[in-house]
Structure formats: C-alpha cells, structure tokens
Length: 268
Length: 259
Image 1 (cartoon, rainbow over the protein chains, first blue to last red):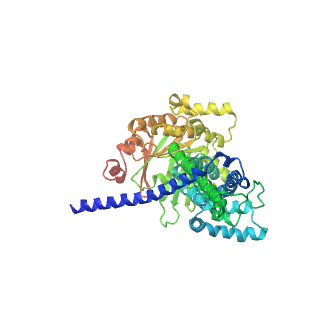
Image 2 (cartoon, rainbow over the protein chains, first blue to last red; image 1 turned 135 degrees about the vertical axis):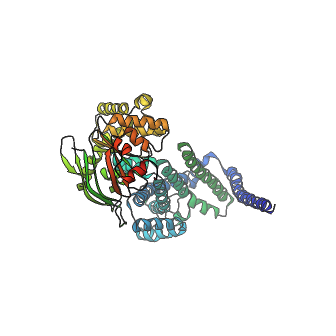
Image 3 (cartoon, one colour; image 1 turned 90 degrees about the horizontal axis):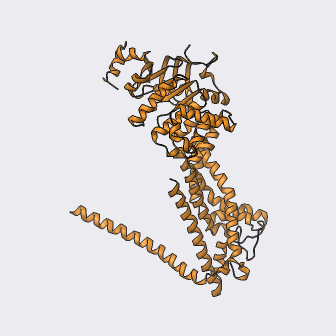
C-alpha cells in the first residue's frame, strides 16, 4: 500500500518537473513568436542592416558557420578516426579527455582565446577570426560523435574487410565510415546548429557589420552579434529588429535540429 | 601435399604468459573439408584466425612454429614469415574467411561481391559483372538477388547475408576458405543451405571450418581435429573420430560427457 503511494507521489513529482521545464520553453518560444512575428516582414531578407534589414547578417552568419564547418568537420573527423581506429592507450585517451573538456569550455573563453591569438596579432577583428572561433567550438562535438559512432561499428565488419585483403585505411574509408555515416552526419548537423546560434565566440573576433561584406579580413556581419547590439540600443525600432532577428535565428536552428533528427529516424 | 601444413605451432595473445595454442601439428588437405571441434576456449578459432593472420589486426601477438602454404603452382611459403602489407593482401586473397555473424558491408549487393575483386585490381566493368554473377551463382544466391543487385545488402535475410559473404570470399578465387562457426547465428533451414554450399565448394577450394556443432562436423567434413585447452588431442578422418576415437578425451567430448 505504502509502496503504491510512494510510486504515485514520485510519478506526480516527475510529471510536475517536466511540466515546469516545458512551460518555460513554451514561454520563451511564445514570447519570441509574438514579438518576433510582430516585427517580421519579408523586406528583412532584402535589405542590409544599414537600411533596416537583416540580409547581410543572415548571409554573414551562414558564411561564418560554413567556413567554421570547412575547418572543423575534417579536423574533427580526422581526430575522431585517429582516436577510435589508430590511437591506442594514453595518447588517444588524452585527446579524448581534452576534447571532452573543450566541449564544456565556456564559449566566451574561446572567444577571448581567439582574440588573444589571432585578433591582436593581426591587428583587428575579422571574419576569419570569427570562423576559427566557431570551428574551435565545433571541434569537440565532431570529434566526440565520430569517435562514438565509429565505436558502434562491429569489430567483425572491420575484420571482414581485412580478410578480403583490404588495407586498414581502405577498410576505414570504404566500410567503417559508411556504416557510421548516418550517426556522424547527424552529429555534424547538430554541431552546425550549435555554432550558428553562438554569440560569445564572435563578440571580439568577427564583431559585426552593418554592411554587406564578403571580405573575411575585416569585421564581418553576424546575426547573433547584431542581435546583442540591437537589443542594447535605446530606440524601439532597433529592439523590434532584434526580436525579428531572434525569431529568424530560432527558426533556422530549429529547422537544422529537426532535419538532423529526421535523417537519423529515416536511415536507421 | 596438404595446402596448409601447420607444424609445431604455438600462439600467445598479448599480455598473457601462457600460450593459447601449443605445439599444434595439423594438415589442411587440398579439396577436403577439415573440421575443428572442441569445447569453448579450446583454441579452435584462434588456430583458424592464425591461418590468414587476421590476428595481426591487433598488435602484440606471438607466433611460433610454421604454417606452410603450398599454392596451386606447388610454391611453398611460410605464412608466419609474412611482414609486408602487399604480402598480407595477397595472403588474404588466397585464404578467405567467413565469420560467425554475417558481415555484409553497407553497400549494394553487387558492390559487396565486387569489393574483393576491386582490391585485387579488377577494373574492367564486364569482367567485374561476370565474376560477380559467377560468384553469386556459385553460392546459390543468384536466383534470389539477380533483379536487385543494386539494392543494399543490409536488406537481405541472415541466411542470404551469409551466402553473400561466401560469394564475396569466393569471387576472388581463393585456394582456401576458413569458416568460423558460419551457421551458429542462423536458423536450421539457412544452416542446411550453407552446409550444402560448403560441400559444393570443396571442388574448387580447400576448407577449414570451426564448429560447435558436432552433427555439422560429422555431416560435412572429411577430416576432424579435436582440440582441448590449446592442444590438438586427435586428428583423423571424420568417421574414425566419431566412430572409433583413439583418445579418451575425444570420446568423452563426442559422446557429450563434457563440452
């Protein structure tokens, strides 16, 4: 009797905590949708920030995240492959531990690091510095997923490749990575979704720009940094624009996240 | 001349003092089926995995003795002398292996069978297609898959996957095939099909098979080796092992007194 009671109380508490969590999430999303949709219009996609639009910022954010992916994905995958397939003992474990620590490193610290190592020596903020900061954010996630997904590939599959006369690197490229492809792709998408919404690593590295720009050696337009700036402006119109930008960013991240889940579900 | 002649062979896994196999002397005869039987942990899989040096995927193993390989041109070489990558590739193309669990690669049925051929350097498209077809026919799978060669191999049933793995191994025309409990993950009907196929294959290749299933050994093999705790206890024609074993241990095992 008392066990049943405890069970019921426990269930009620779990449901309550879940509801509280969900309520906050809903609150954030609803506020964002109301405020964001109120200021949203398609002209935002046609004009740059200097003319009251967001076009240069959205494109700039994608260029920064895209460049970060070009740097971070191959490096991260290579490190993950090394840890899982080649590394043995201490070295591999050291890299794995470092990557785990990096995963929880505060993003502002990574921004400060890139500021010290790249922005100061090169004499100013630049798109490159921003992309590198984002790549560093991305690296541990990609390393971790690659490592984990490769570890799920059964040993027998590698042996079967070797037993047909394939060399180790061929087995990894032709068979092991293919077998882990879906998991790795999902991880990469989630890593991309993470960096596209980052502000802190860009704050002192790429900064932002009111103008459309493809010049990565100068301050570079960034949606997230501009949201931060706009939200601090005194005028109502700037703050409305910040809401609209936040709304667009959230929808983008949501789409990327959901497509990650969609891929996993359909390819399993 | 046996195709493989294992002489005074010992094997030690890394980090272990005691050898897992000691002083094994065993011939694998040409175009015959040799079954390796014995209780779990007796070293039968370890011995089989030494014959294509698949152990070398993991470093630190110690081999002693000889495994002489006499190829179809009567050239004799010692498998344990192999050190170079290209020699390993050649060895594994000549001595194929089929595993306990089916191991289809995550690619199409055609590409699975063509994989070893491509590694062996076959580039010509028609030749590839011909040899894939021959291999699939040779493993009694062609009729079931000829109309979906471009579909993923992961969609086949367990028994079909195992026959695909046999086709993949047969495609490169090996001289020896090593089977490591090939039917232990399959249902009785698939097992029957695989056993028939193995018997069929001995026309072209020499076969060594590790099995837990004594009925299987007696059904398909010509010779049987009984192993126990890293030793080869008895080796003879299969009928002698099962009807008239010389060693007490062999008799106890095949009559089910332990195992």
